[in-house]
Length: 63
Image 1 (cartoon, one colour):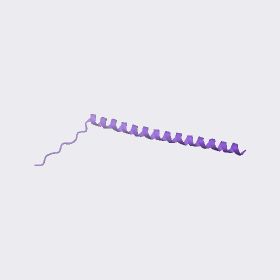
Image 2 (cartoon, helix red, strand yellow):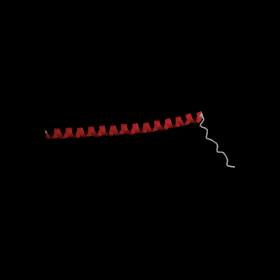
Image 3 (cartoon, rainbow, N blue to C red):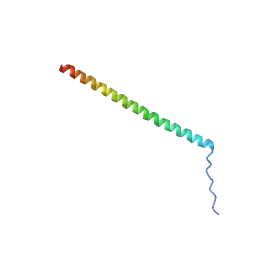
Image 4 (cartoon, helix red, strand yellow):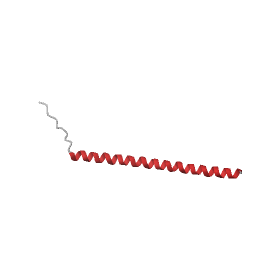
């Protein structure tokens, strides 16, 4: 006679624990993405500023 398999009970505590874990994971991923985006933006602004300084120096040296 085959044995009956026990059904996995999804208790409310387990569901909320999984939801909390998923929420933390999503927040961590978002924080990393936001940090990388901010860093890339700052680097782009710094490069833009450096180019502006170089062009200004070049123009003043010509004139």
